[in-house]
Length: 534
Image 1: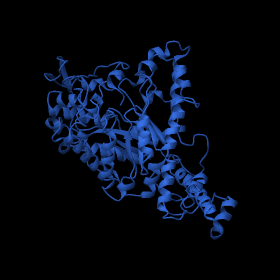
Image 2: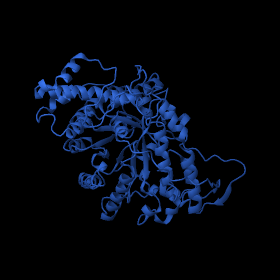
Image 3: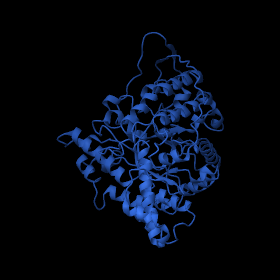
Image 4: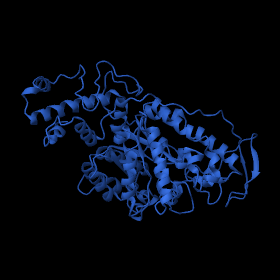
C-alpha cells in the first residue's frame, strides 16, 4: 500500500455502524487514544474448513502465470489499514493505525478474533470475485501478513502474544484463492507484512515506525521461512500467478542481496519452484532494480508502484499536465516503463496505482470529474501498453460511494471504463469469456506446453506457414527458427485466448522459457529470428 500518513489525508473517517441488540458493551481500556465505551457484536461462525486446491494442471497454470494482467488489490482484508476501514479501529490499541493495534485491542484476544473473523468473512466475499470476473478483471493481488499463516508463524515476533487471534485465518486465505479460481481469476500472493517490518509503515502490520527486518538475521530468516512455506503451498496451485517477496521494502543497501539469496532458496523448494514466478518490489527505485531483473533469466517480475499524490511536485501539478506526462513521447512515464520492460523481458508490472489526485491538481480544472477520468484512464492505458499488467489499489474502502481516489468499485464506469477485458473490441467466437479457467479446451482449440509444437485449431489456414512446416527438412537453421517462432507465436495466442479471452503478457519470459525447453532445436545464435517472428 502507499504511505499511510498521506493516504489518510484523502479519506473521510466514518464511525462504526451500530444497531439495537446483540452487542456486548465494555470499556475499552486498551484503546489508547480512545477511552470511550465500545461495543462489538459477538461472532461465532461455523468453522471454515481448510480446503483442497484443484488438481495441478501445468497447461492451465501456464496461461494464468504468463498472461497480461488486469488486476485489483484486495486491500485491508488480511492486512488492516485504518484509513481504509476506520470502524475496525474504534477499539484498537495504541496508535490505532495497524493490524497489531486491532489484535491487541477490543478488550482481549477472544474479542479481537471475533471482530477480525467477521471482517474476513464480510469485507470481501465470493460475490466480489464473481463481479470482478464479469467485468474483465483476470487477476487479484492478495496482501497478507505473516500472522495470517497462523500462531506457529507468530512465534518469536510481536504478534506472538495475540497469535490466537489468527488461529482461523489461514483457511480463509485458502478459501479466497479458491473463490478466485472458481471465476477464472489469478492470485498474486503478496507478503505485505514481514517479521520486524520491512518498511516501518502501518500497512506492514505495526504502528511503532520501527523497521527491524533488515537489521535482524533472525527476522530475515523468519521471512525466508515464511516465503518457503508459501512456495510449498502455492507452487502447484493453478491460479496462483506468483508470490511477491516483500511489499514496498525500505531501499536498503542489502536489499538486492536479500532478494538474490531468498530467490536461490525458494528455487530449490521443488522442481516446479525452479520456474515459478516470484515478484520483487523496486522500493520506489525503478532504475536500480531494472538492472537487477535484466541480468537474470528466470521468471522474476519487478513490481513498481505509481502514485501522483504524495510528493510536493505531483500535488502542485495540474491534473491535465499529469495526464500529458503519461502519454507516449520522449521522456514520458510510459516511455520510461517501456524501456525498463524491454530491458527485462517485459517482466514489469504496476501493482499499485489509483485515481488519487490532490485538491491542488484539480483546483483549476473546468470539469474535475472529466480531468480525473482522463488521468485515471490514461494511467491504465499506459501501464497496459508498457508492462505485463497493473493492479489498482484497492477494491473498496469503507466510504466507497464517496471515494473518488481509492475505491475501484466506485471508479468503474466513472473514472475508469466499465469493462477491462483483454480483447474488448473483438468477438472470440466460441471462446467464452465466462467459461471457468478450469474448463477443458474444445477439441478445435490449441493446446500448448513448452517444448512441443502444438496442434493448430481448424481456424489456422496460413498457407505460407503450412508450406514451411510441411518442408521443415529443407529449411536453413535461420528459416527453421523463423518458422518455429511463427508457429509457436500463433499457437500461444490461440491457447491464451481460449482461456477466458486471455492474451500473452510476459512475452519475453515466455519466449526465453520456450527456447530453453527446446534443448537446442533452435541453432545457437538464431534465437533472434525465433523471437522476431513469434
